[in-house]
Image (cartoon, rainbow, N blue to C red):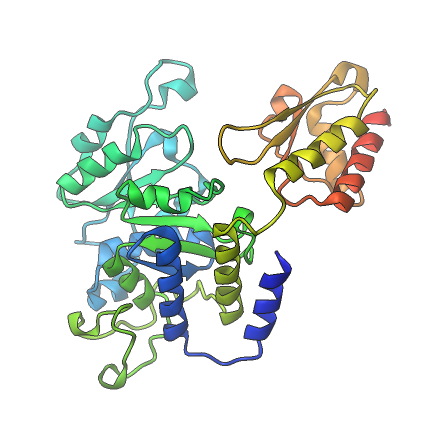
Length: 374
């Protein structure tokens, strides 16, 4: 985290605050930076997905909020492309939502050329459909605006998982601009806020439902006065008991830290530049000269992070990429590479957490692991 974030969190730790007012203030700051109507600081993007799904199903009905995750008799279906599914959709199911798959992931299975298509979403809509879940990546299909168009034509909201879609900075507003009703981002990663935080932004009524299902609701309704631009008390018949999101507490220190980090990130002041990060990776490349490895620095189009791909000559090394990765993990300091390409004998390094000292330590560890055949 940037020093400014650490300092802000330390100061916040010395204060006592009204958490409803603090989250309301956070909502305004998040809205300013995302273009959404409102926002909320969550306990990571995953809890944002749970709270977002809960808000879509329960709305501002405290009776429905109290029932979750029992969704019997409620609209509880969330349409999702089969190729969008991953371990994090557990967070949506945690709310009581039922996932309805569309598409066949023929490309992933090597059995066809077509990805999920827009008409498949529309064909899956029934009276039980509560919303559509969409996982955003640079290659996600069909395009989000087309999915939004179909959803809104049927009065359905779209919940977008964009946890790892920063940078570019422009993505803070991109998905909202495309019509998404709720968007979840990680508060750690590129934003460099507390690792346990996330951002949920979107429609004001849905964020109000999120707040009601997350905050301490040990209140008397008659004398409870939340900020009117955050929670519309006049639209409520009462308030729920502690909601399904109560276990996803976010401390005042985390909220203040995340907001500080968000402001820095939005103004391109949150960490090393892309040029600096690429320089760290080039340093590693130079340091591995003469070893049985073919290094390639890959720079994506736009503002994404550069990555270093190390293709290992496993015949010369006498070890597989899995074995080398295991050696790196167990060393001191431990080195944890992206393991998505190990089957292709490739280690992938993301420079997000590097500085010069760490880069030098990383290079030494790589040289040791790739020089030894023990």
